[in-house]
Image (tube, rainbow, N blue to C red; front, side, top):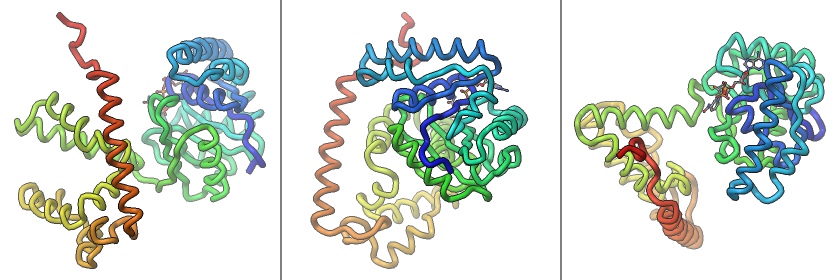
Length: 325
Ligand SMILES: NC(=O)c1ccc[n+]([C@@H]2O[C@H](COP(=O)([O-])OP(=O)(O)OC[C@H]3O[C@@H](n4cnc5c(N)ncnc54)[C@H](O)[C@@H]3O)[C@@H](O)[C@H]2O)c1
């Protein structure tokens, strides 16, 4: 592994690659941006610098970030040229196994042996793509979310070959670039899309059953569990509300909708062991003493009030038909 990642090659200068390049350049990394030709990469660089200036003017980027992008972001003549200079390569070309494999093959053939190589695929298994990379112990998925400059999360997924040192190095680099990564296993859709799609699927069912309109669901989700989710993850939510409460509700939902809504086994075991969440001093995430409980409640109440203030400041989000008369 490289001793320190200083130069990042981003392969594919489209929507995601462009955003990823801005993230690293704004954070002071040297970025080599490549696409199908030198001309495409150069045009993308100009567009990204101009867009960064606009972001800074609108206070979406910190003061000085646009100059940093201008200084650190370079258009490479080719994938090979960019790869040859990089400590870390992030591939963000079309979501197609053949296109990705071909680009990864070329990149890994021209990269230093210790260069870490990541793919920003949204759906293709890291274990499918690894065969395209020479020395696959340095290869992994680094899944950013759209829009990359503004969404902090990133999923990091190792293949069966990936060296633990590469995973650790990538997590450190993402944190240096201001992201908040988590390492997860290789599963279709990775973790975020699996959970997100389960929610979207259920929302469609509710509409199909005539229980609520799409608009009503959007309003409710944004202002209920969606409102909380930026501050409290699902397992904290269960611990805060009560593990036994969730177990009972799951039971009722299973009676109505069948096994897809059955209480998860770990939830039932936690109830059987008396780990009922914050109120019992022990829950899914561990122990809660008095001070921890007070700190969580204090943080939560403050955060929710601030979140509502943010919603009030921003006003209702524009929606379809907002400009129609
Ligand atoms: N758009 C999203 O919301 C999103 C979110 C997360 C991950 N992703 C993933 O990111 C990747 C890129 O998606 P996108 O939305 O930026 O697509 P995009 O079409 O905007 O950009 C892809 C870029 O790759 C370039 N490219 C294609 N073939 C190439 C080649 N052989 N050599 C060099 N460059 C090549 C294209 O010219 C284009 O600029 C995909 O794998 C996608 O699944 C997308």
